Each structure stands twice: as structure tokens, then as C-alpha cells.
Length: 100
Image (cartoon, rainbow, N blue to C red):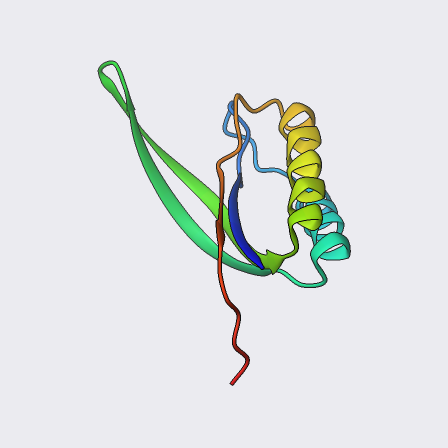
């Protein structure tokens, strides 16, 4: 299994909040692929030259098979373009899942 996480910003680059419908659509597309998704709030900080930015984000994680991970990446690439983001953070690692 692969554990993957990704971050979707709550606001566009002009400071306008993305609609609930847009966020729900992303969540639905990933959930349809992976079968489940966990979401939490996250605040990110980054520095560009002399300016510090604070981002308000949705942080997600799920576990999936390798082919599902590839499909999730394709969904995120699509939404990166739709949301007009320079990038969307995502990571992945092989794990062993135990349901206790």
C-alpha cells in the first residue's frame, strides 16, 4: 500500500476563497479513486525574497494501491491547472497497513 498526502489551498493567489463546491469536487474525485480520504486544516508558511506568506490549506491523506496513486496524481495535476496554482504539494511512501 501507498500512503499519500497532498495539500489544497483554501484561497487562490488573489486571496479569494475557493468555493465549497470546488473543494468538494476534488475530494469526491480522490475518494472515488482511493475509496476514502481524511482531511484536516493546515497552515503553511513560506518565504519569497523579503516577503513571508501564510497559507490556509486543506491537508489530505489516504492509502491506496500504486495504480490508484497514479490516478490521484493525474487528478491533482488537473486541479492544479484549474485552480491556477504553480504547484500542489504531494508525497507518497510505501507502508504496511494494519487495521486493529
